[in-house]
Length: 178
Image (cartoon, rainbow, N blue to C red; front, side, top):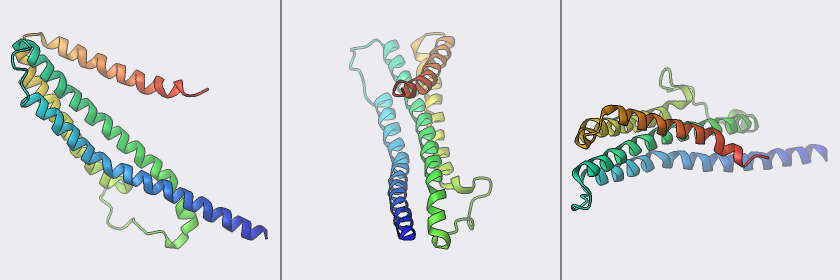
């Protein structure tokens, strides 16, 4: 009777972990299209949408610069989110492999050198980071010079924004803990 209970418990745990793993995989596969949509939308706003004279040329350029910078920061955060989701998936893989035994697929063959289990997500993250880099370059080279503000203001604003993001990353999860 104990063996039956242990087997039933192991099966239930496996099914719950596999369901969670599947949902994480679905979430991970949604990040790249979301990044493309988000970046494309911000680029469209920054390059195409006009203020129709409601802003001065300097303020309009500043707004465009900030939109492109925000697009770059969003892409960097999406890369961190993708890596975190993949890390959580890896934690579930250990228990799934244990239960499945030899039925678990062997993915060691065909791995990209140096990337291992993270080859697919590393390629996605590389493309997303290129989008972030292009957003930052466009903000700095195309839009910032038209604002007539010194370069140090952009650098200072970017540093303050990144520090705020890091502080938020560290402090916000602690708010929910007791």
